[in-house]
Amino acid sequence: MTLNQVAFIILAVIALLGGIGVVFLKSPVRSALALVINFITLGMVYFMLGHQMLGISQIVVYAGAIMVLFLFVIMILRSQHPEEDTSLWKDRRFAFGLLGGALTVALIYNFVIQPTQSTYGATFDRDYGTPQAIGKVFFTQYVYPFEIISVLLLLGVVGSIMLAKRKF
Amino acid sequence: MQDRIGPNRSGTITLPDSFPLKGLAGKKIRTFGFIQPLLDGVKLFTKEDITPSAVDRKIYFIAPALALFPAFALGATLPWGPNFGLYGILTPVADVEIGVLYALAISSLGAYGIVLAGYASNNKYSLMGGLRASAQLISYELAMAMSVACIVMAVGSMKLTNVVVEQEKPLWGLLEGVQNWFILTPFGFIAAVIFLIAVIAETNRAPFDLPEAENELIAGYHTEYSSMKFAVFFMGEYAAMFIFSGIFAALFLGGYNILPVNWNHLYQSTGNNLFHIIDNANYWLAPIVFLGKCFGGITFFVWLRATLPRLRYDQLMDLGWKSLLPISVANFIVVGIWIIGTSLYGPIGGWGAAIAAMVITLVLYLNILSVSKKGAPANDKRTVTMVTSPKRTVTLVDPAKTETP
Image 1 (tube, rainbow over the protein chains, first blue to last red):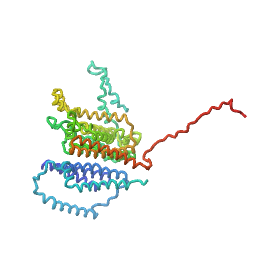
Image 2: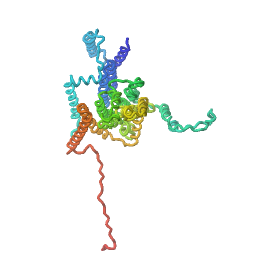
Image 3: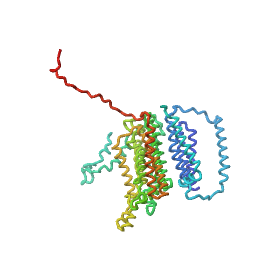
């Protein structure tokens, strides 16, 4: 039981609790905060895997910008009475949820865990996960998707301003 | 002061007459105010802690902690000293490749404490104060990130140790004896000014402290907090000020170097042993110099608070989105042109291309601005015009000369 595994188990348990909290907590603000915990621990898991750029992007973009805006919207438009919850055990939704969960676990086992059982000792470049490596790939191999995604983001910004503009 | 006169009277301590050491009994000790922060902390701990009954308890208690944690976690990638030799094991705390981006990420987590403090107080004014404060924070994060991106692009690495090493090269690539601190370069100066303004806005510090202004929203997002929880918000603000001063020093002011002079080059060219001694002092005094620059930054913050009046909220947002962001994007383009120019034509060609790009960008920007403002009513500026009454003239009528009927 290496330290790596212990750290991963702790982070994974906290991330899972956050994810479960998003669904089961009654107040929308607490559910958003549980999602923030989920994102931050997921970023820490990325750091554990050595992928610095992805982990810090997760924290900057997801936890630092998107969830703050979620919280804005929830706080401005908060409803005073959360919805009444029907009992979970008698509901058909619970059965379907269990079925979906079992299907997900089976798929992950079949396609992710089984093939990677014997791939120990994989070697990576020394600058794996650093911004330099990702930048090199962005501008040589994946330059078209990079530019098109940046245009897409610009469309998002301009479109939202157009939709929210007051009519003069 | 509720019988707690400690911090106010900490200038002199008067020993009582029944002091055991008879030589010191009845004497006054002057402390010059050094123990005032300690006594202030004790006062805040012993103040009455009022928790309103209608707050959302869990979030109310966790919000100050969420405001404090990013402030302290911010300084993990700061270069307190050189990365080689004896100091190599001391600095920085985490020498990761994503140095500056880590600081930007953790500073954007600072918005949570403010928003949740405003929400949990169950008070419309605190909620509005919290939302306005975090809107201000995320607006100025963009200009901050763009100005940092200029420096990162010029250096080629996000590690702050590499940024400081890059600043030890010759000034503008030409002058050998002077260090190339980025604040002395044209694009670096503009980026430094933008970064400084953005940092003052990020720490909610005057003149950007409308969210915690007293006469605006009672006290903003920390209205319902008393004693130590109130102090925790300010501890976070001051810690963030300190670390941001350190980041400013590392990015623009050459980090742990004392002066922008290349002592080793002067020693090689003149042979004077004094320069060799100063070069060694530059290495061994590096953490102290860095701390000194952080303190200088805090002094600047305190001076600025006493000097400038507060910005109104729409002026604040206009400054962030309409002025700082376009200028930092234009600066970014100029840095890109400088890099291409330097790699193709050497340093002189690079600076020529950069200055030409600056001039072209400025001319284009002014033209576009004047075209876009033509014919549009100026309804986002509120001007006050004084209505002056026409001058009244007084004509003297001599009663002796007028004819009375």
